[in-house]
Image 1 (cartoon, rainbow, N blue to C red):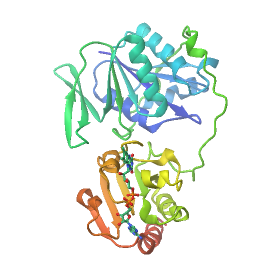
Image 2: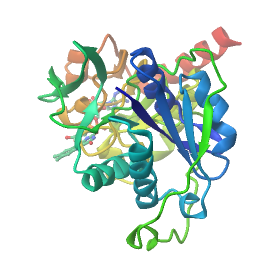
Image 3: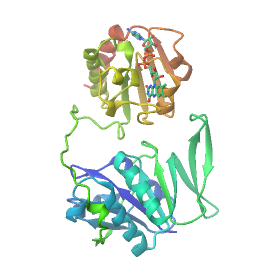
Image 4: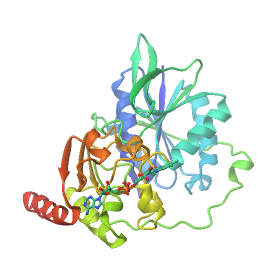
Length: 322
Ligand SMILES: Cc1cc2nc3c(=O)[nH]c(=O)nc-3n(C[C@H](O)[C@H](O)[C@H](O)COP(=O)(O)OP(=O)(O)OC[C@H]3O[C@@H](n4cnc5c(N)ncnc54)[C@H](O)[C@@H]3O)c2cc1C
C-alpha cells in the first residue's frame, strides 16, 4: 500500500488539518507516505511535511497552481498518483480540498469516502469510520477499487510530529488540461480575523447564537475566544440575520467541526446546529433557559445570562493564563 496526502498551505504555513491527516497516514506504518504541496513556496515546506511523516514530497510551484483553484490541482494529483503508483489519497476537509477530492474522483473514476473521522488498517484493508444518522452512529466504510480517496472531517486527527524532516523531494509539473486553466481568480479578500486560528484548525471554538442579543455583543464571543486561543463560530440564525459572516456558520448547512472544547453562548441547540458540532471533545453551554435542548448534549451546562457570565469568565481565563 502506498498513501499520498494532499497538504494545503496558507501564508507559507502548512494547514494543521492536513498535517493531522499526514501524521495519521504515517502512523498506520504501512509503506512510505507521500505528500503533495502545490503553490508558491511548496518546495520550502517539504522539510516541515517530513516532520509529520512524509517520506517523499512532490512539490509543484507552477504558475498554474499559484491561485487556490481546484482543477489544476486535480491534474497535478492525477499525475502524481500515476507516477508514484499510489493506491490511496487522503485529504483534510476544506473548501479547496473538497473540490480537489471530488474532481480527482471523477478524473480517476475512483471511490471517495466523504466526512470520515478515522481510518484504520484491518487485516491489510483500509477501513474508514463515517458518522451517520446525524452523528448518532458510526459506520465502517471501505472501497471496492483503487485508488481509494478519503476526505476527513476537520479536527479528526492531532497534528503530532513524528521526527524526521528530511524527505526526498521531487519537483513535479503536470500537463494541464485546457479546461483546468480556463478559470482565473479575479479577486481574493482575506477575511478579517483577530489573528487567531481558523475554525477548521482551532482546538477551541466559542460560538454565539441569538441569545447574544445583538451583533455588537459578538465581542463577548470574540474576547473569550481570544483569551482561550480559539476561533469564533456562529449559528445560522445569527448568520442569516447578518450578525456574523457565513464563513463562521456551524451546522448542517455550515461547517462541521470537532474542536477539543466547544463553548456555546446563547445557542438553543437545534438539531441542524448539533450535527455540526456534537463530535467536539468537551461541550460547554451557557443559556438562560434550563430547558434549552443544548443542555441534553453538553458536558457542562451553565444556566444564566451570557452578558453577566461571559465577561467574568473571560477575565478568569485571562487571569489564569497571565
Ligand atoms: C434546512 C435547515 C438547515 C439549517 N442549518 C443550520 C446550520 O447549519 N446551523 C445552525 O446553527 N442552524 C441551522 N438551521 C437553523 C436551526 O434550526 C436553528 O434555527 C438555529 O440553529 C437557531 O439558532 P440560535 O440557537 O442562535 O437561536 P435560537 O434558537 O433563537 O436560540 C437562542 C437561545 O439563546 C438563549 N438566550 C436568549 N437570551 C439569552 C441570554 N441573555 N443569555 C443566555 N442565553 C440566552 C435562548 O434561551 C435560546 O435557547 C437550519 C435550519 C434548517 C431548516
